[in-house]
Image (cartoon, rainbow, N blue to C red):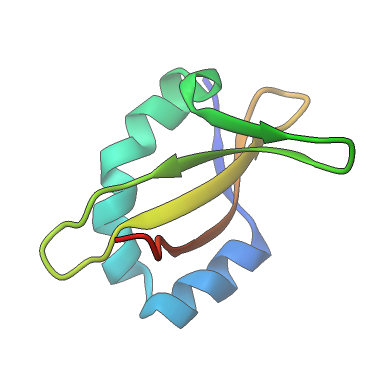
Length: 88
C-alpha cells in the first residue's frame, strides 16, 4: 500500500495557515486520489524541477488550497508544501 508522507516543510506551511484543523478538511478531498492514483494529478516539470499538485475548492471558511507533492522511488506520496490558492 502506498504511504502518504508529510514533509517538514509541510508542517511549517500548515502552521502558517492556522494548523491541521484547517488543512485536514481540504486534504480529505484529495487523500483517496493521492493514495490510489497520484499520477492522475497535474504535473509541472522543467529543466530544474518536477512536482505534482492538487488544488482544492473552498470548504466553508477553509480557503482553496494547493498541495504540492512528489512521488518517491517507492511510489509513496510525499506532500511537500501547501499554500492558499490566491486566484480565488
